[in-house]
Amino acid sequence: MAIIKKFRIKSFKNINSIIKFENVSIAYGNRTVLDNINFTINEKTIHGLLGPNGAGKSTLYHLMTGLLKPKQGKILIDSKDVTNFPVYLRTKQYGIGYVPQYGGAFADLTLHENLKAISEIVIESKNLRLEKINYLMSKLELEGLKDIKAKHLSGGEKKKLVIALSLLSKPKILLLDEPFSALDVLTIKMLQELIVSLQQDNNITICICDHIATSLLQIVDTAMILSNGKIIAQDTPSNLIKDIDAKNAYFGDNFKIN
Image 1: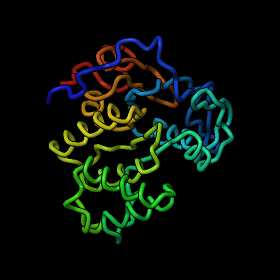
Image 2 (image 1 turned 135 degrees about the vertical axis):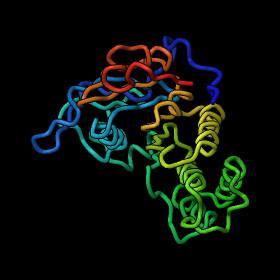
Image 3 (image 1 turned 135 degrees about the horizontal axis):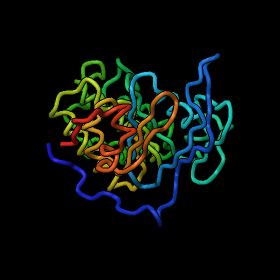
């Protein structure tokens, strides 16, 4: 499979950071999950998060959204300290959208009913709601599925619906949790192309957490490896797969993007 993102950011010198973790630690009881984490995600890029099971990837996402509060350290969004901000404030004021690995839609509602229900919460104008719903159904090629209940959609169709739901509020930052999980090769390619298109067309920042390293690295500008509660490497995909620490902790010696 060819690399889908033909243009990758070559220099980050003039790009503003949109998410920044400063000396962040968190523990569950006596178990330290993240230990003095420092990293930056630049705006209008696609960033990847990789790591073995139990490395702390989901915890990192929960800290970004506000579901969890760190034991120590600061979380900055758009240069503002949001460490103590709850979920709704981060969503409303800083535009964080979240696409979970499982769920995210009302199973017994049709695709259109799902979009209508969420739009009534996040969009005040009725005309704007209809316009946004029609745009997203067209953009994500969902028109033919509008009357199908969410529980009857395929894995890829459900992913597209939940992404559409997250885009109703016009997020600045979109967090995707395991978007390629349990999908076939053609559906993964479709989803890759959609993610790249959404980032470029809407100028948003997208962060992807996934176990399928090849699929993730084909479309991100930068990625980082999380292992044993620490970030052991962060770089462009081509540099990351050559990093000795990344090889030892995650990739092994024979890993290739293509």
